[in-house]
Length: 359
Image (tube, rainbow, N blue to C red; front, side, top):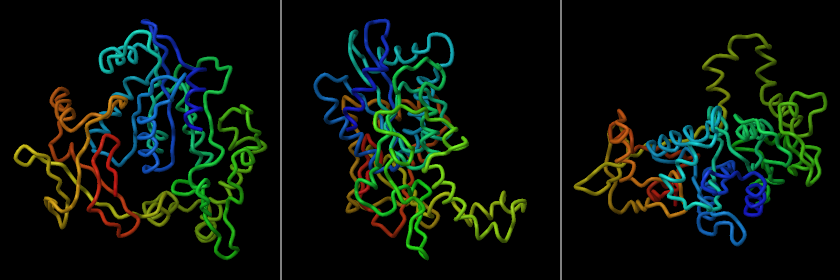
């Protein structure tokens, strides 16, 4: 399904470079980090098959080396700010100088991203594929498509999946982590009784309704907007009954701690340091860094495949730090955090071009 969606969107929204390439830059928004890396790996492995563009894949999420995320954001900010002048000049230069793309090629540059792309990123993609979590996140992601150029669009440049990964697995709670859905234990019901996007958006397959804030604030919001708002109301009703609407506690640190945006997670900090010419992994424990033992089964295999873009290896990242003269110490640059909701075994993971893969 995703492969066909990529082909369709690329065919409709690719543009021509000065040396005859047909290029599109697309965003695939997924809800969680694990599926993000899995999808990136599958796209890199199989491409789009026959009659499709060559695919270059960049996974973008929070479970990565800090410096590699800085690297990705540096380049994405540079390439996808298409506000003035020749809007694709930076992308064309990148294709020639960084990817060595041959004239006349057909290619799609794809960023497979979690919600980190939704907030605070001023990027302009040609098209997007969205795994739904909430109406707010759908609108936020849609705002990253044709954001700066504001080109006239005659055909849909966003494809919204009818069901998300949790729904396809048959999970009882679907729009959660991230999302607003929760179960009312007293009534045994969830806040979102339907998980089919055609029904939730009052749309039929093949229709092309605009994705805008009118879906939330319009006169007749669709079922998904109503379910999301009702979920928020239920969450806050007990506190609202005590505080009322104007109490300053709503804007306090206490409120943030009492009602976090997501479930509290255990966080472990790691860093990669040089040990006699070889990378060594250290973990922050009891106020100090401790090198992990060899039996920890941590594997560093970060050499990117040919179809990856913006996924430098440790060696390439070190060279980039020196080139840009970044004011970063080694422990800051090559640090990463792992978050766990339970006492999971944190001793086995891979450091790859896709990020930090927990085993």
